[in-house]
Length: 334
Image (cartoon, rainbow, N blue to C red; front, top):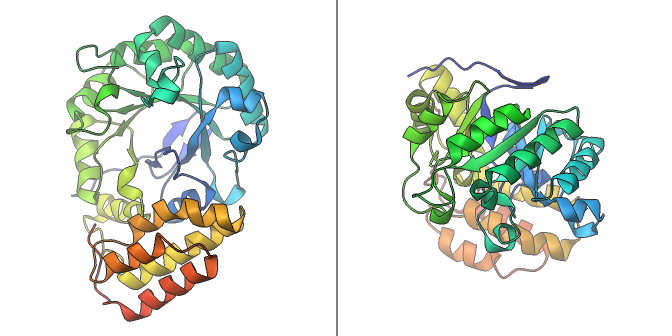
């Protein structure tokens, strides 16, 4: 079962182990990135950040660029379709301390794609190339890009975009193996990751449907990718990185965390978030995380329902503490 885990070099940045936390809007704030880093993620990535918001110095945009030394190496993902604005935003992110700058070319949501940004760039290779070249030439830190297979299943431009990325000076490409219009529906096409890997000489990161240590091993073996990126599988489950790493190294992932560890980590997540922002905002935004922590074990449903309606931090922390000691100690389902 063991897999030879080689450190991934992205310019001067060493990603060791080659297990990466995906950028996820609304989820990959500093507290969650730190928890995943502590559990074995070799690289963590911010939520995607608007290049226009950065350049205009909008407060709600800059709050997403919250970088700390204890989470390094850390990548900041930016989106936009204007090469000059993207270059300016990249310089600002470099000055803010990002180790890597990632270009979002995978987001399909209308508020992003209708501006020509995100996955919409997969339909416009010339603009995509111009954006990637402008960003790569603007900064000294490595620039990476995250794409999908194409905009639709009938127009798979991912490999062509990957080749353009290599020509533009991009140092690494991540491929989520679904077309943009599919969202998260259906199964990820790992064969396409293998095809893309064979088409370029820069490192390739595989992404899509890695929810267990066994999935991580299969992804490495099936695609030949240089690193595995984990997204939704890590929500409420930062231990997934620890267990993937153990499985890849020894063939034994170790036990899943019990209810007590889950509740104590959820509480730590809340406390870390409270140190970063106002209580009302934190508790509202933490509900999505808590819904993932609190599932899969007896008594989870009523606890989750209660947590979704609490508005004060002390009530949330008290509920989690009570659950850690009163609920059955068995492991939660993954």
